[in-house]
Image (tube, rainbow, N blue to C red; front, side, top):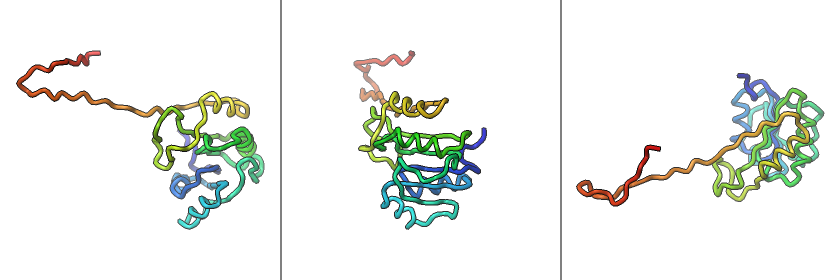
Length: 173
């Protein structure tokens, strides 16, 4: 299929990290603009050095200073941490090309730990219904994906080899 990143103009809103921003550039994005409301995050990425086709800006999420239709892909990596999600999604829609895509991510509030390497466990989250409702207000087609953590269990028999186990396990189902 066609890449959502290669040769595209990408806006990444919030959760700015050097790894995230440079990985988009490495995936052949034409241009990446990473914004964050926290100037400390922006300065950390600037200090690490960055490619020429990566722009770093500090601005409030609900008042993006880009013209309408400026981006092919808008990524909201921490939408659960944003207080006014509705304003952010409205702005994302505005700056997105009519044929563009929005990718919004939030942690599963039912999980006690995150599967993401750069997300701490006290991060915000939003329910499935709330996220869907917020997105559906501005986009005609909303496709939701979920990530469930895998939990594995081990059945260990500590009975000596020459004895019958007191409990048997039927794994034929």
